[in-house]
Length: 168
Image: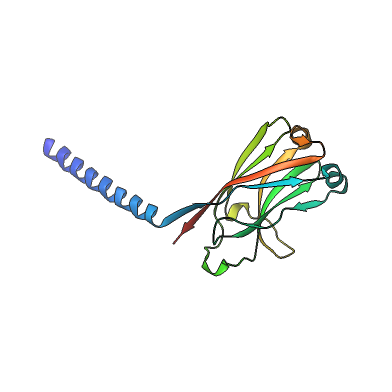
């Protein structure tokens, strides 16, 4: 019995070593990059809400030599916040589809913060148009929550921790 247990223990240790090697190889095949912080101001929020308009941020790159992307908000009874991708200078060298996470923070007049981190992958991609290659819904906020973060008729949104997972 003891010999059998010792043999089982030896096999388990070998399996653990093998799994640790596999994990190390997986970690080596992944690269995480994090992009710069972006701060956007949406002026005339009441007008956007009244007209149910889509607001788009200026374009930015996820990280140096990264994905060309922007932030979009659509005002309805809720505010939907999207991350969208368009053609970029470095597309030939990037993994498709984009996978990673993005943190969005609403900043109130009293410096109160509403922070939300979203995962972006094939499951979060929605229909696209107007030159947009991919679009990910990051979050939806009720108007009553959004109201807490308005500064006059402006909304301050910070995009940070754009983490891109690239598999080789």
